[in-house]
Image (cartoon, rainbow, N blue to C red; front, side):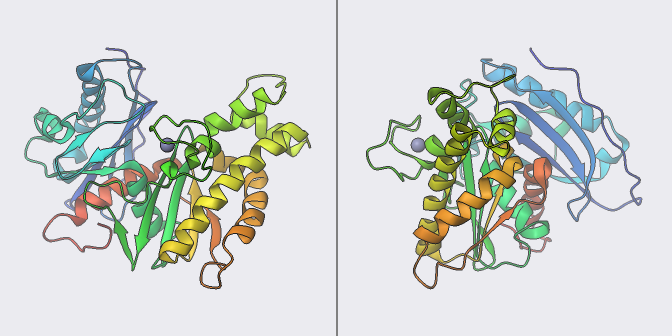
Length: 332
Ligand SMILES: [Zn+2]
């Protein structure tokens, strides 16, 4: 097993006796877990690195390590449900996942395998896609709060997205509704990892952003990462600005398509690339104004996500709680 040392857990006093929520957020880089209160406030965290290139059991051992860490804390006895947000694609009807960036898991029966872990014995377990979880969290507590119709996106290594329609977070039959990252916006574009070509993700992700800049002559002074590219864009580097402009254009085309298709009030953007909102959002809003032109689509707002790295955990916890019979069905 290859996992990093657990990161520090953070304790916040809780009132005795109230039911709590637990959540996992499983991605290609890290596996995070949390215990939360019923309102979605994170009380304790645990995190391990996702074993790179590991087999199915290696990744599951990292999941177990996160749960074991959380289950060792006194509040675990009050946890009433466990929500799992996983990188996609997911199949929530069958409880299986095939994350593109976790090669060891293909049609992996995640829900059944987690239920078998001693820490999860007796807990209701609910699976959702990580972008849908982020959407649920931003809708309940973040930048899409109060909106009946919204698109929420995570722009980082890849591009994930979820939809709120008529006040309800849409899962779709398998849990992948709103998967905007793999909608084609460049008809003759390069092949994408998904098998199509010219996808939003292929043009707008953080990975493609830095790759395109390097191909066009960007010479970073240090690490060739998104933060360095954003710094150079702020300093006026023409290649860096052009790279962000292309990403912004692809995101704008995708958002305009969604706004035209289903009518949304706001597009909320989170993920690592959104950290560079000061260089991403101005061209994004400019391109959006040129693509979303029909009156019912032209007013869509672009906002930065409010919940940052905890959004997946919070959303997964709230979705799992909402699937319990006694809960208020607000997010799933
Ligand atoms: Zn694709």
